[in-house]
Length: 181
Ligand SMILES: Cc1cc2nc3c(=O)[nH]c(=O)nc-3n(C[C@H](O)[C@H](O)[C@H](O)COP(=O)(O)O)c2cc1C
Image (spheres, protein in one colour):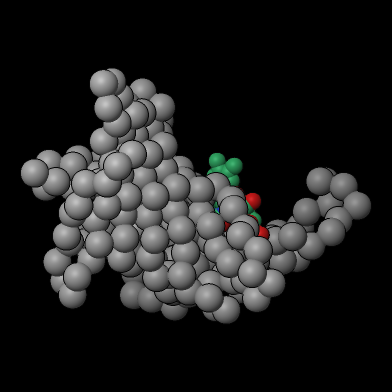
C-alpha cells in the first residue's frame, strides 16, 4: 500500500519543523522566472499544514518572490541522508505579506532571523563590504510563502531495490502509484 509511504512523508516533514537538526528542516526551493532558468536556493521549513501545505519565510523584495509572482509553480527538494529518502515536491506558491497573526509570528522570531527581513536595501543589492549592511529600525519586509503541493515523489534508496512512489492530487485526494526507480 502506498499509504504507508504517504504517512511517512507527512511524519518526516512534520519532524523537519519540530525536531532540531532534522534534515527536512531545510529544503531546496526551485523557481522559474521570466527567463525560464531554474533558480535554486535553500530555505527553512517553518510549518506543515493538514494537507501538506509547506510554509517558509522570506523578504518580500527577494528574487524568489518576483519569480513566484511571474510563475507560481515551484519545486521543492528534500533529502534525508540517514534514511536515504528523497522527496521531490511540486506545488503552487502564494505570498502572504499581510495576514492575521503576522505580528505574533514576527514577535516570536529570533532576533537574528528578524534581521534577514529588515535590511535597508533589498536582498541581492550590491554593497562595498559586509559591514555596510544597514537595518530598518521599525519596519520589515517579512512575508510567509505557502506551497500547496499537487505532486510528491518519494524515493528511498535501498537494497535489493529502491522504492519510488508518485503521489498526485486528484481534486482533494492523493493518489499513489509505484514507479520504476
Ligand atoms: C541553511 C540556509 C537556510 C536559508 N533559509 C532561508 C529562508 O528560510 N528564507 C529565505 O528567504 N532565504 C533563506 N536562505 C537564503 C537563500 O538560500 C537565498 O540565498 C536568499 O533567500 C536569496 O534568494 P533569492 O535571491 O533567490 O530570493 C537560506 C540559506 C541557507 C544556506
